[in-house]
Length: 297
Image (cartoon, rainbow, N blue to C red; front, side):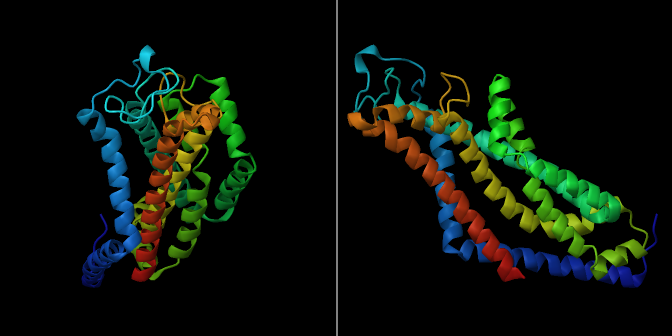
């Protein structure tokens, strides 16, 4: 156990004392940013629509109504029906659940992988850092969309597999950001002081470096959520997403293109608006958070 001198205790108390006001100022700046509030409200409304909506409107997303094929919005079907007579509102809510769950899960998984790899690479430095970064450079030369299409075509797609595929193909950017931050932070006085007091590399990574890169990581992760949702929609639009009859916004958009010139507007606009609303809300949150972090600094 490393003994602590009075000076080190004073330094720790000052760090804790200063850290809390910094965090509170960051969150105050975020909530005062108009885009931050709009983004939170927008994303919350989408989450409530997708997850609470089915409890309020418990209609089946799979049941077909032969007598109501391509039916426009009505009292029975608020957003009409598709070409198979399925309730479009119910499918829109269920499709949003898949897009949001897979998008958030893939972004969080890629963040964990990227942060861990970046912390180790940046703190190790030297030859280890050079080798680890060359591996990243090689992986970045492989087109992500090609990998997604290949893996999705080889394996039977499901929500878990889609999450894993998106996670293992999207963590490189987070790694480079974290590694760059660590290379700068590890030269700071408080890191050198911790090392002088005998702190291990593990302690330095978790207690000195990780808290100071989390702001940047959060912004990158929020962007990654939007990227994952776009990737899901792209794969589904190309017919390589989750197998039928499971709905998602990309698949609904793809199917609606077949009826673009048949005045079936209720098949085109709802999934497009839902997808655009979600992406704009996420981008607003990331913009406000980045602005709040810049204000703090």
